[in-house]
Amino acid sequence: MHRGLVDEHEFSKLIETRGEKLLGLLHYLAGCEAPKEALTRPLLGELLSQAMQLEEVLDSYDAGKNCRWCVIRSLTAAVKSFSDISYELIHIRNRMSSYRLLPVAQDFAAATEETLAFTAGILVRVGREMVAKAQALGLNVPQGENVSEEYEERMPKGHLEHGCETRRAETVAETVATLTTGFLNLASGSEGVRAASNAKPEDYPLCLAASLREERLRSLEFHFHNLQSQYDTHVSGTESELQDRDLIVLRGHASIVFHLLKTATVFAHYYERHVNKQRCEALLAMPQVVEREALLSALMNYSITFIDQYIGSAVNLCQEMLQRYAEVGEIEVAIPKYRGFHVRPSTLVAKLALHYGSKVQMRLDDQVYDAGSSLDLFRANEKINAQKRRWLAAEIVRLGLVPAASEGLDIVAIVRNVVLSLATQGKLIMYEQPLELPDTLCPTEGTLLEKVTNETGRLLAMGKIDIGTDIKACFIGDKRVLADIQLLAEFGYGEDNFGNNVALPDKLAYLRR
Image: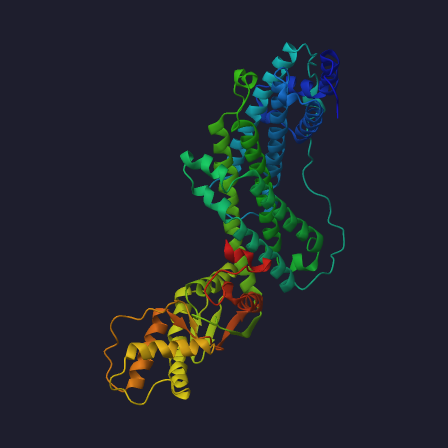
């Protein structure tokens, strides 16, 4: 930590020395007529390294808060950001053919070239401004001679011979299950980012303030990188990789999404930190090197659009792979104790089945339901409620809660007493206290007992009361999906006895998105 004010002359000499390499490279770029063709990975790597080093020195002296040096600090940040993005774009351009990417709606190669031309143009404008500002500050700016020769990237065609022995690994089914479920969970976690791909240009700033914040994109970038690393550590070069070539395709999609997220993160970072921020007069007086609308367009129409498209195509691939290696089993779990398969439990179970793309059935007594359809599961309540009504009638009779004589008795009062008596004994739950009964009774002929049981059945159907059940259902399908259904059932299908949300375990976090 530096105490007191630094001597301006000494500081200028320090920046001149530490920034010499960067200024020389920028002087070269500033004079390039075809900047996209001039960019190579060695050159961009050097730009990124030198910009990071100079930025650290500038920050050590609070240059961003000094009107004499804040422009240099801002331009250095632009060099760092757009050399980083440009490096990623060249990597994508060079590697996309080896990623075995599935077809998407738009021309990815053309969009990559267009975005690279955009970032290259920014680096040229930044270079011109940086050179002009450095000269205005009295700094020596090297001419950047022989840069094109020094940083030329010569890449011989072909690849090295694959001589390493194939490693043994888990069975193909286990490998596929691990990677595909990992990708599907990340795809679910990316829903907010993917949805932003449909936004209109006038809504782009709102997206940046919500689902496309830098920290959210950086978190997704980290998790997709982890999935890629998991593949490279446990699958690359194994027998499993040779036995199912779709694994390599999946790896390519995890990689391309990771690299696209890296570009999106830096775009968002630059927008939040340098474009969408109150700037001092010195920065406002500087010509605009990055146009706000153009930056947002590159982020949304390139990074976010293709993140969405490549995740979407890989989701279908993952679901197909899971079905190919499905191990069919069955489990028996308790149905939701109260209210049965109403909206929330039905929706969660269906979402779970659809998440994996697997066919799962639920069998209740002699009826079979499609677990991937919330409406079909909701239909099971007819059978569940019928059992509840039969139990309720039998319990009223067993406990002798209805008087034998009926003359002069208030049936509404009797119904209320029956409900309160059963609730006191813990045999049912009341969702409404005090219990309000309908003004008119069911037009039912019959004995007092029949009228009372019909009324209590109506309260059950109206959702004013409910009965806990120990009814169990059988789910049949892929064992991996059944494991999540088992876990969901253990957590009450996401609700307590009164229908309030309860936290689900991390493994089921995708159900809350």
